[in-house]
Image 1 (cartoon, protein in one colour):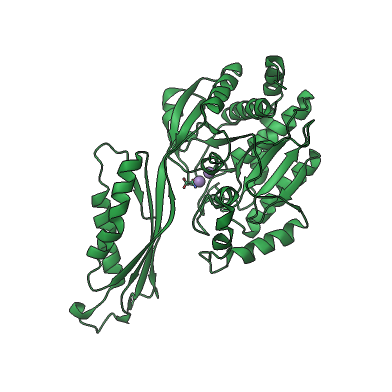
Image 2 (cartoon, protein in one colour):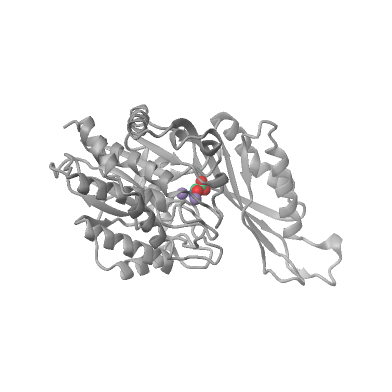
Length: 419
Ligand code: HGY
Ligand code: MN
Ligand code: MN
């Protein structure tokens, strides 16, 4: 069934800005930091509390909650045709170690607000609607990130992911078992289930909407990325006695690699994004020449050919700069630039116009779960501004009114997908 223009307008009008803001502030208590941000890494006690609250809100909405084998949670509002594939929305409740209140949480809470708005507007859609909370989008504790949606779309990767050892030495499968304990029994949800469409709300994490005075970003796609874990093997030695020329200093070799890689990635047009966000020396003692260094590479670029060409030079360059050390370069995640569905982009644009929200098209520099969902169904994303484009930072900030505008677009889009 096609949902009427009048119904879509009524759904948009039923979005409650105050309720949506309150949900954000409630969620932000889990892992709240002194600087006003959030530290709620995947499958930690803080994430588990956030999941629990989400399940409580789902119960208040009379929605069914289920979970799959990687811990993605599904809040399902029934439609009139129980056999129809659901329309889905959502994002993630986990954060970076110095995260903000909105990255991820907004996408889940905009979905929940859409369910409240549909109830308030008295609308029953034909298809069910699912709000998904994906596991470990951020990838700070367990690499790689965007993991829950990746396993949803490629279940053959489940075992590899369950065996990932976190930054704190905890195996993902064990952390997930504890999450299950905290949440209590939930029905199982299959991977790769039929989905009619997926739309994800997110803060922009860049300053373009703010700079142009737009409230809604119609996201055209997500730039491709390659992520690596690099291990440099040297030899431990006494820092006060071992002659410099005889050392196999893993931190010196790793530093040469990082500088060399930054030179390789130099881009006068400032399109390429390259980051070494983690670098750890072992055993990590001031008086021991490090015998091992591990560092991460996060490399992104919208042009598939450029990214392939540069990415293919990374391992060779590291080897050339290793000096007396050994180096192992492991690629742990790779994705091409993913274009979003034109039909979903149209729905988003129409929803924004219906809600009088000025909008523009833009490409996402950040990775999101919608990237993986796009392999399975028509998918798209809705961005709202965040202050100064700051994100992955406790200072991340967004206004209640912009969040509500995004939720109005999500509510209409998911309702239109659900018919
Ligand atoms: O890294 C990313 O792009 C995402 O925020 N996890
Ligand atoms: Mn996010
Ligand atoms: Mn993020």
